[in-house]
Image 1 (cartoon, rainbow, N blue to C red):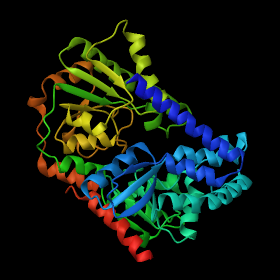
Image 2 (cartoon, rainbow, N blue to C red):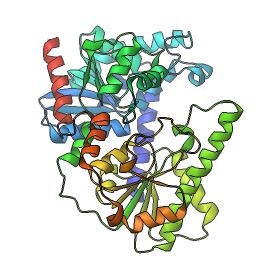
Image 3 (cartoon, rainbow, N blue to C red):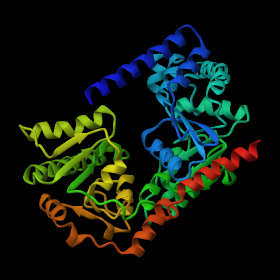
Length: 439
């Protein structure tokens, strides 16, 4: 494990060095070569080739499409490598201030963006020659390093798609609430051929918002491809004596609190989140025969958040407790009896897999606020208000696990469109049809 991590780290550093070197000598051809040879390939038997910009959850969708539809070969380049190229043409101050929300509404980095576009334009033919792609695909339409690249795709009459992995609306909310939620995108533009959506509400909300470049004809609802993993293997996976918490970082989940009152609420929310993690660690210490996994996002700050909680409260290792930022979420869910977390699609995956779901309770702080997937479906989740409740539910899942199938299906339809295991097929077909119609 250590040697593999060291090898990956050295490879990553070498690629960064080569990209920076190619920029220093002003060689778009070398940059394209480095991006191409470092690209990861998924489904080499696909009849069409699509260039992808990597993002962790998005790549889970891509892998599902390759597995359950299999018509497209995906060649994946690191989005962060493109950002290196963009940042090369920006000053330090511009790098710190440019963002998705101001990319099209300010003059920050204007000259740098033009130079970035010119460099990509020179790089593009070589990249296409090496990879021979017929379209581009990303998991969000706001990434700053993506804007000029997508523009070049369209200028060269090559389709560019976005499988919109962000902004999953909450089950049961009305369309007016969904419309309000997507106003965070009001300064964005859509540069692409077609945007593919997880569910009907987010589709309608973004179309209603009137984002430049996006209209009804450029949008289609397909569902969430990675959820096919559960529908298409239903009944074949038997969980072990394991529980998994998909750790949540309070400042990420509750970013819209401001002022003194908002600050106090956020402080209380942070306490609840802290205790929820701590309760599960204590549960692991008190129940050594049950494996407890706390899975964080990959970035070091998320891993540090959980390890700091552990280090402040425990003096020695708990053998049955694993804290990690690695591992496949799908496998962790399939191997676990209980899935814990908050406002994460992993909880939806747990519902599909018929796992027991536990979340922290924030209702006393933010009542009547659609901040939880289960706001209108509380029967599908257990909200742990105390450490005792959390422990009791984990130890007695058979007693409490009893999903109403009608409620479960309605919940899933609200969030993932059709709960039929065919999202991968719909997504790839939408891409293929657009490529064919574009020729």
